[in-house]
Image (cartoon, rainbow, N blue to C red; front, side, top):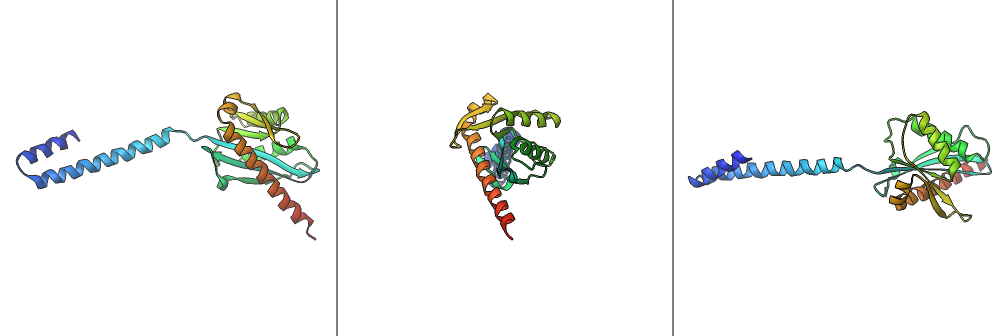
Length: 195
């Protein structure tokens, strides 16, 4: 770039404006390439916060389903939502169903791994998630959303750093998981009610 600028000045001094203009265009092109490279570098150096939320839905242990929803940088990513028809549980065992969902999800090493896992429930759900992550040799922070009797969020448990910093994103991922699980469960129930 420095050499080109020197050359351009030299051509300008000798009134060779056509040649100077040619070099000016080259300089502009190089600056543009440099700007684009810097922008790409900026995008790569800022990691995406990927939150995966899990929820289980059933009615008295019937038609048990599990789901995974994804929130990336505060935006829902519906293309990456996943449904799981529970195969190993025959009764209302939410932690057993969560265990199955997490095992099946983590077996998909081709899927992008999350920076944070959000489960619906309390200590039991957090412990199940921790146990599965340990078995898969993964260290991923876990948060859980505790609900009141009207099923409204009342507290975020688990990894406090994430719970405090990303409260809005955690609650969004959790409410999406709940909505998605209920919708999938209703669909399964209606399908199984058909004669």
